[in-house]
Length: 102
Ligand SMILES: [Zn+2]
Image (cartoon, rainbow, N blue to C red; front, side, top):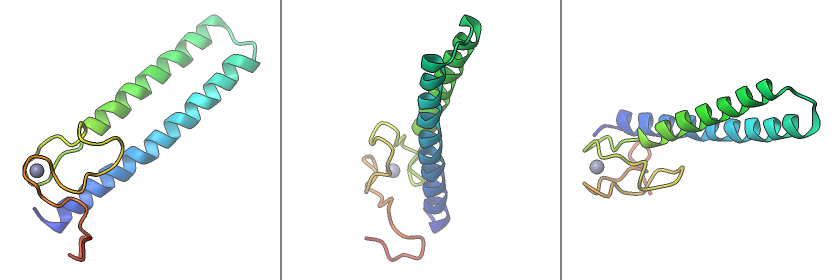
């Protein structure tokens, strides 16, 4: 496992967080639109469909987070964060790329 792997894991993690925030903003806006605007049933359905689609993509992203050392799936270990150690091989996953981990 290299520092590069840890950096990639962190990037994947940050992307997941970013999408998660964007998703919730989208959910709030959609609820606002459905509540306060006169929109057709069809627009409403496609809005809800998009929401479900986004939720699925988001879960896929979270559950494709893997340990760079043993490829164990990390998605089941934590909600939206990187675990300190891999549950399978015990590799430290939060070390800084320059080796000064805590
Ligand atoms: Zn591992």
